[in-house]
Length: 138
Image (cartoon, rainbow, N blue to C red; front, side, top):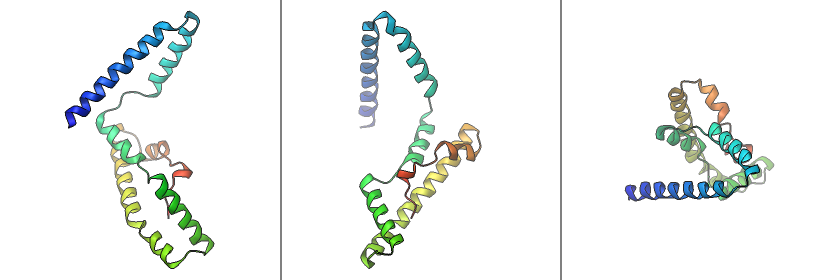
């Protein structure tokens, strides 16, 4: 199964590269400089990263599914508004352990990424500050 995934990824990359080359070849001359500038910017913004770094970033960026996050936000708001029912409060409490586990894994991945990149943990924290809309703090 793993080999099929790698093969598919390589095949898709080759197809995408071929398509991009075709598109560049059809660009009018006046657009070539803009295209070159854009491609230069893209390669500067996304340097190649190792599989280990990619794995750590995936852990750091992992979030609750949107519907779960929405439900959690609703329950938190009801708790704040003091309108939460006992059943809803019990439901809210079921979120604690999984979120603490995700947070512990995220912190560990940040520490490892900081070591891998040879930067401070604060640098990594600043890079991956959560979007307030994605926050899952209870």
